Length: 80
Image (tube, rainbow, N blue to C red):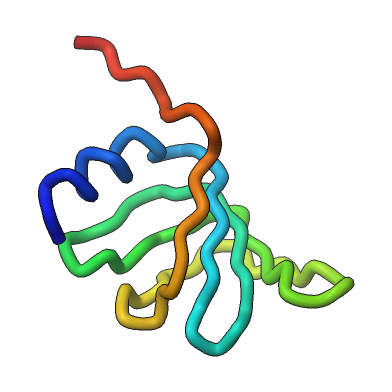
């Protein structure tokens, strides 16, 4: 993963993001951590694919299954 992507995702830690997976499911959750292969750990997550949201709590999403990552409008501000 390029350092630009790592730096971008780093600004969204502890924020709610939305993930579209290869199996057409959509997962929403609080981004807790990620690695260079774009494996993501989300907490307070839910499957929002259909009409009824299903609570998933804490999940690990493999990077090869991720098709799209939707980020909030503004990243967290880091203290320099």
